Image 1: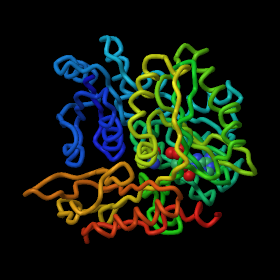
Image 2: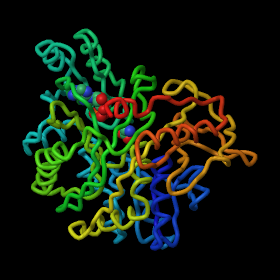
Image 3: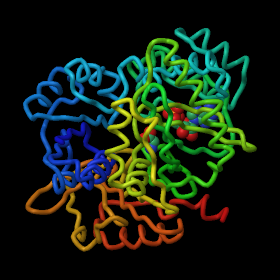
Length: 423
Ligand code: AMP
Ligand code: GLY
């Protein structure tokens, strides 16, 4: 089978790594990919948000199956174009991708499905939004409705900050994404990410994870795309998982079918859990990054069979083979991230780090110059290990980190602290 993966980050490197291990994979192309991905697959430059270009590329290269990594091509309807052309694709339709692309849409679906989530208001003008803030008080959460690359959420500790955030959004700080604003109750509890596959009918859980969004140790400082993650998430007990499925995920999927936009793909369910009760924070219509890296390390080659079963509506007969293992990934980012940072520094020592079914350095933002890997992004590497316990996975991941010589980069040294503290 010839497979095309769309995307260029650590998520796509880990997807490629897992898919390659499956004997069904004859040829793998990742577009556009990165220097680490180029070590294991062909990379091709392609405008992945242009449905026509993606269909043309898939046809030219006799692609049998496309896996869409990031949200932007999904929201742009690239899966629809591929399906229309008769090409099998893993990823929701543009209409179903609104579960990530519009926060107001998701809140309306939750209302219709009776799924527990934060109370909210949805606004298209600043005066009404400000009146709502004043009536509710702080802390309160202000969200740009549309896709804002993870930056469109402001947790306002005071009413003044909330009012300023409303002004910012309506004056275009987040472009079109902020033309509509959702204002939410601030929820407390512990966050976890729950990943399920859905083929329109059947929901199949494939794993849980927790990530660390803040740049600083102890979960302090500005938000990032994610500085590390581990799987499974201890807070996702069997009882919490059952409630999340019964009260949130299945009713949402049923409501999507009822509205004529069935959901096919992976659903990333962001939850806030307090006193054993999960509430929905957000949906994403793709794997998380770096959560995907720990899920792929744990699932391995079976991922291709699962994604194909999902794309072909055969999830009812699919099965996930779980091991009682743990995985952790530690992100190495360029000094300065998530603010401004330099590109182009050389990364040494990567050749000494073991790479096998329990150890992988997934590349998020690298290039190659003069035979050396160079840093080409904010998040650059995701150093990932798997072991029988979370502590062992963590020790191994940090040993791998310490073999990498890259003074222009940094990592958090406390990934997994919450889970390890509660052991
Ligand atoms: P989102 O982009 O919706 O995932 O929001 C980013 C982060 O903001 C989440 O992972 C939470 O940590 C936080 N967050 C979002 N909405 C809320 C809420 N209603 N209450 C508390 N925290 C929230
Ligand atoms: N790590 C969070 C995300 O992928 O959205």
